[in-house]
Image (cartoon, rainbow, N blue to C red):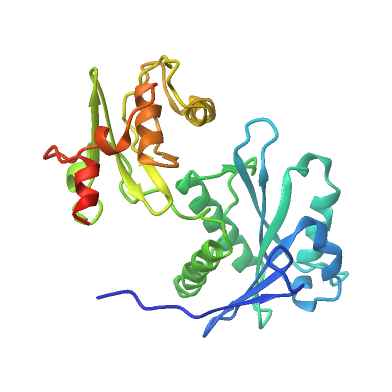
Length: 294
């Protein structure tokens, strides 16, 4: 059965896509804000941002150039301040200068208490860590707390909606690069429209798959250690970015995302190589021939 569509309402609070965005879904009590760091002061009069909730701080590391995220929670204080006050504290914190925008989750009926936000903070942080798209700035994983099975079911439904909204707002922080996690499992993958593709050159074997974002090389692929002069500059940058994910035996320790099949083949082979020719199905059909039949 095909998946049902979702109706999402995005309100551009400042009349432009780069400003504050409020997001709601039909039949969902959740309210989500995407707020640039520079626009926090514009939110002082918003009552729902004085409630309890869970928030994400997004930015880029100055040291590595990687996307980074911090997951936190904020409860209502005796002063009546909640989420916005906590975000202002982070803005003043010199140790958190990396973040440029926040995504905030609260509710239209102010139904989050300490139990709910602790569970969601833990759950969200776990999803982010599992997806491995962002470097997580939390020094330790938040505790889940004790909840009833009824409350857990209710909050898991909130999580399902939150994953949809977060992706819609431009952060695929919850989503793994591919559902298949390693080349060892490639035989289990049976989606005909996007088959597993293989690279075999000079005893260096790799596998990967096209996605809507580019090309993913699977964990377990072997990489040519030395780069030739013909290796494109963008691939040299990929090698630098992902060097921590290549072990001493030149084996990839995690799935990685590149911009195209050719970038992926050059990353593996260390030279300018055509992805349309180098990537083949297990039957030996090249990517070029696959695309002719699509």
